[in-house]
Length: 389
Image 1 (cartoon, rainbow, N blue to C red):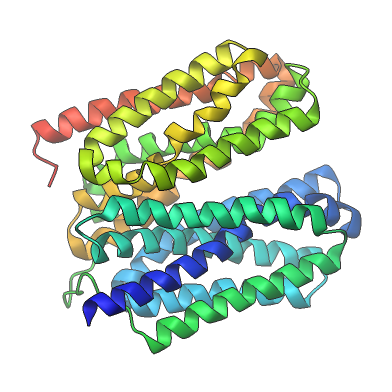
Image 2 (spheres, rainbow, N blue to C red; image 1 turned 30 degrees about the horizontal axis):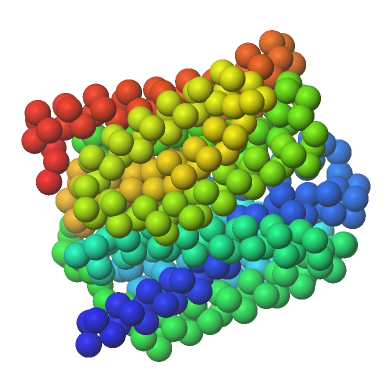
């Protein structure tokens, strides 16, 4: 019976992941439509991204505790309901202010659902968690890349935005029905009275190293998504269409890598895989940036090496806390690490104005090198102090 529940739960996760993948791409696809329809300034348009990151921070900080208190099934139902509510807000309103409110909930709950599905899947498929977790992210990649290709060429005005929101709401509704009719197995049963406070979680010696490692990783990967096109066109004089293709190839490689390489996590183990792929991606990333325009293809194909890093890092976090604190710890680590995204994007534009794109963009490979160095040092110390399970 548990096996059947696992399969149905995983099917619901796959359906939801398609919607979350499309959800994450919507900001970029509809940015020009938002700007024209609401007559937004550049500063107002950037507020949409900022509010999204704040939503990530808030929901990751508190959402994990909701899982530990409510249990996985009730928490997943609640978070899917909130995400669906944001889709309903998008579908039925026509206000810039309500758009910001919806972005706060949509992006915050999207990241939280993503993280919790990762943790639940790891427990449900203990024999091969790496494959199933990375397959989830592969499906999310299909939602992201598919929506960019299909919706990006179809959307023309704000009514397209409402139509897409209705479609995503339908996906959320299907997932909730499956969660209700086929209760997911509680992988880790909550012990009465066992609740970890933020202070207790942060007291763990693994907390700060993991925050720094993941924070630097966020800057490196998200920097490609947010700034590669501008860097290539402004600093390297690459045509806009060609520059966009490099970004598309990078995330296409991420999607394929999560399907093709995911089994390596189970065969080689989390620690060996993270060292191998972090080191390889840091080398390819750095060489690609240093070579300038000829190196953009190296940056693009480095997505294959980046592909399994984030899902595997999320799998790593719970190993350093008791089972009853796993969700809380994961949410808190990721939320604090996401501050790196907020701070970086707040200062990067000013830095470009001050010293130019070529010099400013070097921060990103430097962050990937720093992430890799910290990862090696953390694993060496964790093994010596017997932090590892």
